[in-house]
Length: 135
Image (tube, rainbow, N blue to C red; front, side):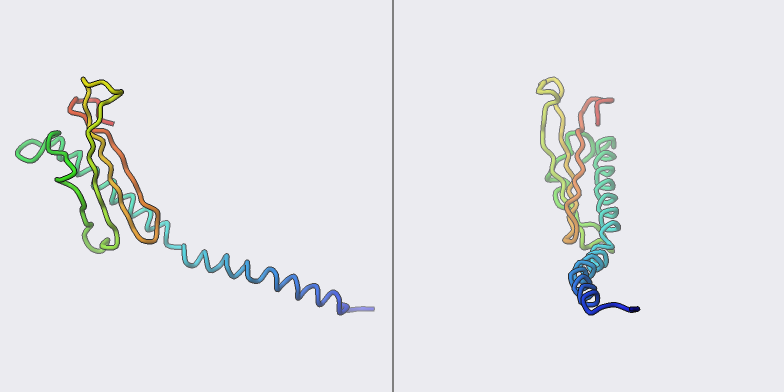
């Protein structure tokens, strides 16, 4: 006898019914989270940009520049310019000693970039007043 029996047809419908919600959920997740890679890339670039500004300020000469002027108060919360208004950028500067040695004071600079659709992007750097020790 050719064709499918009623049992085979019912089993095919049951299996399709079980698989359908999972497939819909997968495609919905891909659609909703599809742009997160671009958002993460922009957040990384904004963090690197701010860190480069801080390192350039440390290397600069003149009033307001140099190691002593790298403080949380100076950089604090910096809002990126348009079209990146949805991102938040905050800088925290903390005094530390390298390996606990008081002869080598340093500043730990943390740049945190936030966006409501992605996890925070955090970039950390140790800055010293000694040439050749910056990491």
